[in-house]
Image: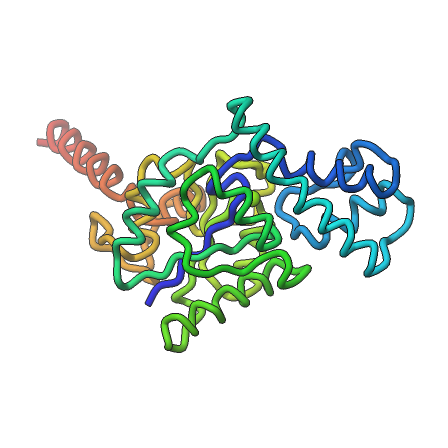
Length: 280
Ligand SMILES: [Mg+2]
């Protein structure tokens, strides 16, 4: 059984800043401070951490447990309105190719698709609602499970194991996100990591976090399916086998999936033919 965990913001959808607006609204209602999110780096962190930091930005001190609960409630109450505003303003998008990809994955019996997100469970469902993608997710790990993303992912895997009624090995778990924090959390938990470049992540940090696969989005499913081990590599290269590159740069570039080996082969053939012509 393969477990595939998707981050939400920037990986499945872009909600046009609905989350930040709802949090700003909630913080202003409690502290009088508008735009608290301006000074908080929201992307890739869990809601729990974001709420604390935003409150701190507004009030100048950490919230009590009671205040945090009130802030959370205000956020969840406000979020549907802000998501709707994004939809109306045509600022709500699905990430390219993700719907087809999910349909393909959901059709398989050897795969369980879930959420691995920093969003609170309620927030996750509200944000995904207009996308129509919710039906593909049988379970998830959420921002309400933990402050730490890696624990959120582990929680998701725990729930997947219950559904599958089987033990899940770390190497059977694949995490797909859009920021370096998704990648780092996956690595921390011992899972595979893949990333979309077209989300909200800082491309430099994302590259440096070195996920096993980086793709712009899901418009070309092939690399994703090969990475997941659901389709064969065109050259028959399987995971864990060593491909001997000529240089460290080739190693970094070709070593990810092996899908470009065909290009090397074609290049080598041309070189050999050219050499033959010269040497006879
Ligand atoms: Mg994200």
